Length: 177
Ligand SMILES: [Mg+2]
Image (tube, rainbow, N blue to C red; front, side, top):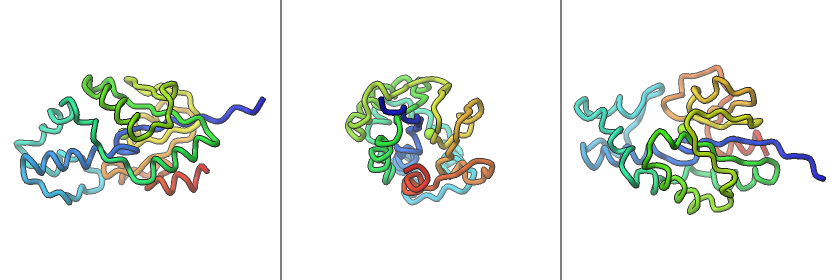
């Protein structure tokens, strides 16, 4: 019997799915926020939109369809496919936070990551996982995690220094393949 492969938990939003792009494009449509909006290190989208619209993101994210057409983050498909040779790759997303996201996220994965079987998709609340590695952009998901933590760069986490960081999927490949 071949030895068991180590397990990796991979987040969706801001790691393989570009939710930030979708927020900016919706704020552009409704409030003329520029499409090339620069989000400063440590900031969230709501820090860079008109004051009266700074909670609009919560409406957007709760709309059916928000998660269905997010751009795929560059390199994630190729690197996740390659990682499957050496690891059990699990997608772990706190999809329960937004009830309309479940079906959209499932369909988005089927379209863009058809090589990830349903057995390796975990839609959850808090991420209590015992994989060997986690790749996530939110450090709240690292708190009770005992394995290797890879912080995937997103504007909001750029000032955080105490975790091993990956800026791109190319860098993930270099570290893990
Ligand atoms: Mg995320």
